[in-house]
Structure formats: C-alpha cells, structure tokens
Image 1: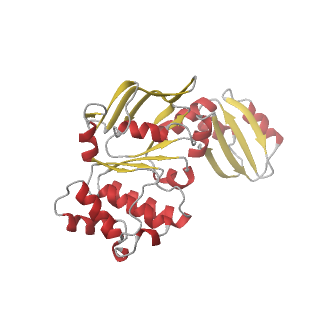
Image 2: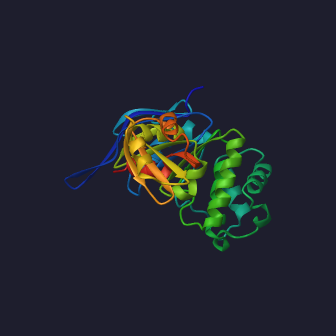
Image 3: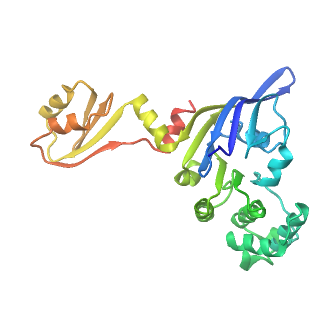
Length: 307
C-alpha cells in the first residue's frame, strides 16, 4: 500500500538580514498508511514548518513531496480537501458554542449533511453534552477536543495534528490519547507533531526525530530501538541471590562482554552484541531471580538522536 506522506530532499529557507535560516533542510520522510506517526523534536526544530509545507500553506525552496498521492505544490487544494488538519493554537469564534463553531467550519468547507456530521464529530470527541457551551467558557482540553472535531468533519483518511496536547493538563492529555487510539482502530492514519514525549510517546507506532531542520532517524519504534541497541551496546540486568567476585570474573571472560558492574543485589553486564545464552551458561549453578535485557526508552532514543 502506498505511503500517505512521501517527501524527498525538501527544503525551506528564510533570510533574516544577512543570515539564512534553514527551517527544513533536505528532509526525506516516509509515513506508512495505517499508523500513528510522531514527528518529534525540540521547539524550533522545524516541525511546524514541515507541516505547513505538507498542507501547502507555504511553498518549499526545493524538493518534492506527496500527501495521499497529491503533489504538495501543484495539488495542495486537493490535499486540504482530504486531510483533517489541526494546527497548533487553533482558534474558534469565542462567542459561539461548540456546535455553532463546527457548523461554521462545515459551511466553509461545503460539507453535505452537516447537522448529522457535526453531531457525530462532537460525540466522537466527547463534547456533545457541551454543545451549547461557548468557546470562551471551555477548558484548554475541551478546546483541543473541539479542534480535533473540526479536523474530523471531512471523515479524512489522514489526520495531521500539530502539538495537540500543548497546554493541557495530564487528564486532558490522557483523554486525547484515548481518542487518538480509537481513531487509529477505526483505520485512520494519524500524524502528530510534538515535543512532549511523555504525553504522546506511549501511543506512537512510528516516529521521525527532527532536529535543526533535519530528520536524524525515522521508522518503526521497535526498529529504531533495536538500531540504538546495536549502536550503543546491549545491557543485561541480572538479579542474583549472591553477588560474588568470581561471578564478575566469569562474566568478564566472555568475548562480547565490555563491562561488568556489581551492585548489592544485581549485576549489570554491558555487551557488544546479544549475549544472553553465553551469560546464562556462565551463571549455571547460581540462584538467579531475574534476567533481562534493558531496552532503550523513547526518551533514550530522543536524546541519542538530538545531540
């Protein structure tokens, strides 16, 4: 199945006085169909600029790309017709209710059967019981959910959400994650830009890390973690009844072992390659409580590829 987003050597530069700012600097990106994809990076990495290029809001200096098979320069109108977009800091009419605001958007995009669709979207995001609440009276979390509701009006195959959990409390972020997971189960592809790993990270299936205008790594999360393991080494944590010097000597004699760290109730063994069978053979006869490979977290991946 064709990817929903594919861009090649995409560049967007700005000139500020004599200085050239490389907001997007030769980016290649591939977003598979049917995933929750995280564009992750620190503030100022170029994430929002990249999204604006994908949506045809701004034009690239060079490079090319397609969204849902449509060219981001020549066919940007077709992209905007088909993609549900939630920009960062989306605004609505403050004195209109949730329902009135969605109806206004439905009118703007020429949506048919808008009354039914407005109700469906408000129910999906959990705002139907608050449909008469004015926008200015909503919490930040409710405003974000209304933003997601407007992105869903066209029942799009692809959702692009720019910093969707910025400024909302932990409960609101959790509710937002649950909504995204449900939409994913329904078959939608969701592309999320964020710098808040702890809020969005747990639901992502694929990521691209962006730093200083460039993509430093991309792919499935498990594949990237495995790549990091192979680069930085494999660390095993062994909880054992008795930590003895002779155990350290046995483990250290294994060719793949780079370091053995002794702690009161456990041993950490750093290896250059997967070595579980060799380690277990060296520990025959010892009373072992647990033996596990320490896998990198998403935060570890982020730190490694934003240095």
